[in-house]
Length: 131
Image (cartoon, rainbow, N blue to C red; front, side, top):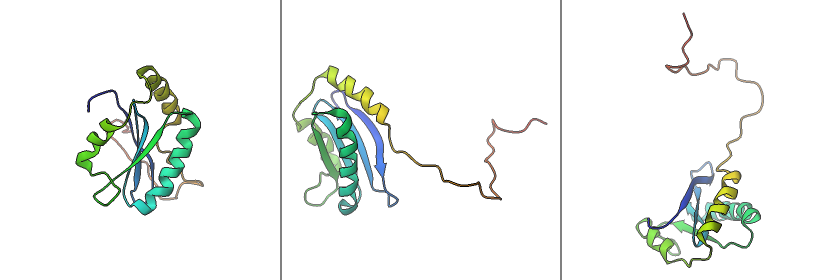
């Protein structure tokens, strides 16, 4: 794509593989959702709230990718991004990128409790025992 776009893949997801990706560019922050629109609305709302705490008055757009009414087809997504108004400068994009990197992507929690009794750690070629 033309321009300076910073993408954070899978900023949020559900168990049903509905995902929200975060894109930062001159228009502001764009949250791109893929999956079922019914399950994406609350996920987009949560991510919009998380991002809103950090970015201040920068605009946040949300886009759902799909072929239904009110959604943007995947092949027209780039064109949709380029038509958005430019609201922030390049220096502001850099500053926001640093702040959003601190926010991070999707947080996958570690399961609590002891390890299962029969669990074994996977062996890779680098992690073999010395003989």
